[in-house]
Image (cartoon, rainbow, N blue to C red):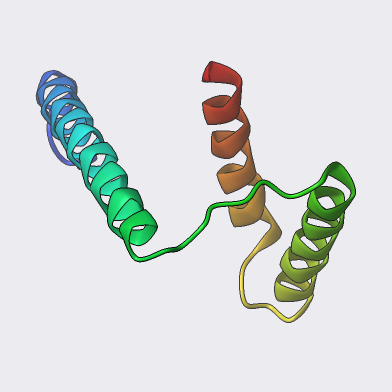
Amino acid sequence: FDKISPEDQLIVRAAIGEAFKTLDTLNRADNIQASEALRAEGIKFVKPEPAELKRWKTLSTQAIDNMVAEGIVSREMVDVVMGHLRTYRNSQ
């Protein structure tokens, strides 16, 4: 990617951006259909209580920290992903 001109990089970024928008729309439709299929099979969707959600988040943080400590993922990569996640959540 770095080997193509800045102008071509813009074109590629725009094309990829449009492709991801299309994929996002398709994925949302698929998710709705999948949820409906699960409900039709008797699966019930539940919302965890605040205390349970807090416990899940604590366990998630511990699991991520363990993966960093074991060298499975780098702290830098975790920080990048968490930054993207924050940006996404703030946009909702």
